[in-house]
Amino acid sequence: MHKATMLYRLQQVDLQIDRLSKQLAHLRSQLDEPASLVESKKEIATLQEQSRTLGAELLDAELAAKSLSNKIAKVEKALYGGRVSNPKEIASQQENVISMKKHLDVLEEKQLDLMLQSEQLEAQLQQLQRTLQAATAQWHDTLSRIIAETQVIESSLAQLQSQRQAEAIHIAPADLQLYQRIRSRKGGIAVAKLEDGRCSVCGISLPESKQHAVQYQDDFVFCGSCGRILSP
Ligand SMILES: [Zn+2]
Image 1 (cartoon, rainbow, N blue to C red):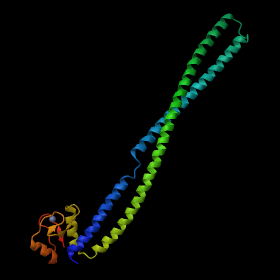
Image 2 (image 1 turned 90 degrees about the horizontal axis):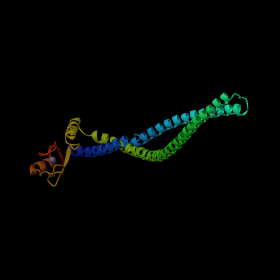
Image 3 (image 1 turned 45 degrees about the vertical axis):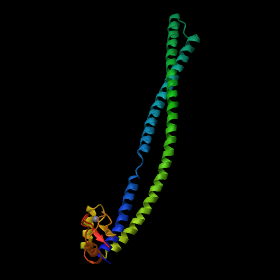
Image 4 (image 1 turned 90 degrees about the vertical axis):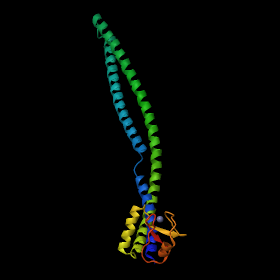
């Protein structure tokens, strides 16, 4: 077989390898968890932290209200149980009860407010968690598809690599080097076909003598315009 034809066949394999390698790189770049999922998890963690803080505040308010209620009950029991008989003391304790009840009102209002905040936060959290769950399921489907596609491409690439080795074994090392050199400079295409008297890549018309040389000369003939090796 003509040297240039062998290189052309190698190039057909190399172009397929290039195409699949690009696809593989693109697929691998999609393997990271999407930013929207990462963000959504962060947002949920922040809200959960807020929810814990609110829960602790609510517990504190509940305990304070309970303790104050007990205190009020105790003072009232003493007042109305007749244990306090000094009128001054009675007046002072009654004032004390009024003041403690006012404080209790404030505490209970705070408790209510915290409960409301907590409910709103819980509702928001549940909504976000549902959204995250759906997005995660969708991401897992995408991931399975990417992994399946990756496996198909990897196996095709392995086949192409052995096909390349089988083709390259018949080509002289110096010819391979020349081919690689031109390929790296000329956008991956080192060999052009001679088609209807023209270079198949740059399209220039080739003189008759050159066309003849491509067909019958054993050495490489190059396109005068784009510098690629011409193959019959
Ligand atoms: Zn050309």
